[in-house]
Amino acid sequence: MQIVFWGVMPYDFDQNLTADESYAILMRRLKPGTVIVLHDKPSSTALQYLDRFLKNAMDDGWSFGLVDDSLTLT
Image (tube, rainbow, N blue to C red):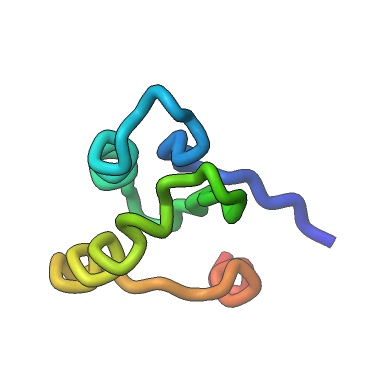
């Protein structure tokens, strides 16, 4: 078993941040190989920007995959 840590927390659970502020944090901190933490609880703002994030990131050349796939590259 491998331990994997997250690398970006956009604070989508923080009710003091708007969805746009959380999105900006995510975009600013994105790096190759980053594990992104998003929450699925009702108060999370992630669903408000997830489609926009995925589209913009892929338009900028980013790709996404499973953690298991990236572990085989090391």
